[in-house]
Length: 273
Image (cartoon, rainbow, N blue to C red):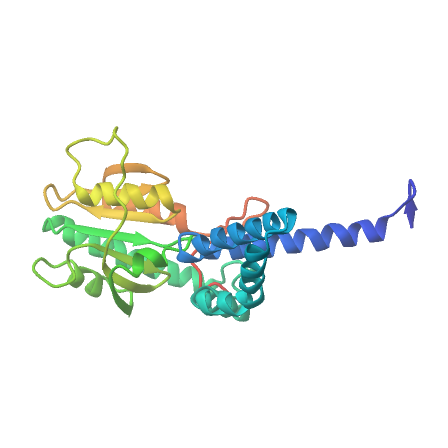
C-alpha cells in the first residue's frame, strides 16, 4: 500500500525496528548506570575518538594501538562487564526487562515494605541510627561493593539486627534490591550541597548524596532524635511517621496497572517477570 509515494508497511516496520532498538539500548544503559560499566563506556568512546583521529592524521603508532584495542575489545568487554551482562541476561530470561510487575511481585514488594517500615518503627522508638538505601532502576553496585556482602532475605529482624549498636555492620548503609539485603556497612557519597542544614549529620548527607547520583530511595533513622526521613532525587523529607513512610515507599515503588498512566516497579530481578 502506497501513501503519497511511501510504502506504509515498510515505514511501520522501520518505526517498530527503531523503537525496539531504542528501548533495548535504554534498558541496558539504565542497568549499568551507577556502576563501573558506565566509566568503561566513557573509555570506549575515548578510544574510538582517538582511533578516528589516528586515521584522519595518519598516525601510525596510534592507529596500531587503537586497532589492537578494538580487535580485543569485545573479549575485554565481556570480562569487565560480566556482572552487568549476567544480570541483563537473567532478567531477559525471566522476562523482567519487558514485563510489568506480576501479582507475586506486588506481594513481594508489599512484604519488603512491611519489613522496612516495621524495622524503622522499632529503631526509631529506641533511637537506633539506620541508613537504608533501596535500589530502583539505576544500578548501585559500586556502592554495594564498598560494604560487606549479605545476600540475605529482607526481614525486619535481619535489618534491625544489622543496625544494632556495637555490632560489626551497624556503621554504614544497608543496600536493598527487591526482597534481598545485598550488602551492609556500605559507604555512600556525601552531598556537597551548601544549603543542607548544619544540624544534619553524616547519615542524612550520605542519603542526599546517593539520591543526587542515582534514583534510589533512602530511609534514615536518626539516633539523636529518633526521627524518620527519606530522600529521593536530592530532596529530603523529614519527620515522617510509620504510616507516612509506608505510603511514601508505595508511591515510589508500586506499579499501578492502570493504563495509560501505568508505572513500572523498578526493582529488578526474579519477582518482576
